Image (cartoon, rainbow, N blue to C red; front, side, top):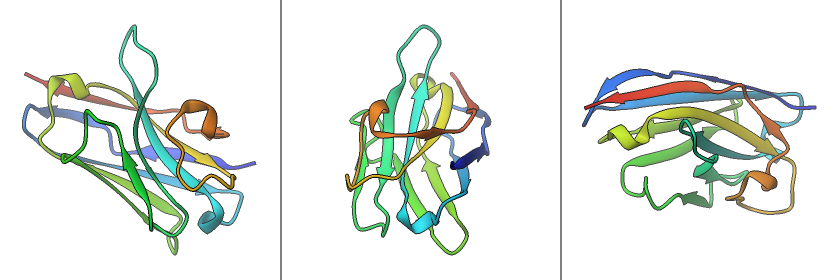
Length: 125
């Protein structure tokens, strides 16, 4: 079992920046694929970003490319999501996810086995 906990959400104005952090425990962190998803009210959970075990490979959703950056620190068992140039459409609950898988990078909900409870991000216009 892997325990996943997000932190760092909040309220920010359009154009601002926010950093989310995720800690995972229960399995060797450097064997876990890590990803971020988000869900706005009334919408399906959407892929945001993912990073492979060694950070060699990253993937981003089309709507966040060029604005968000995912990174990980295997020594600290954490993954970060740096969000810049935020827009109102970025508003939602952001979920961190982990997977023990041979897939290097996953971009769908079904690629992940473990989920955090989510952290709210609100971007005001």
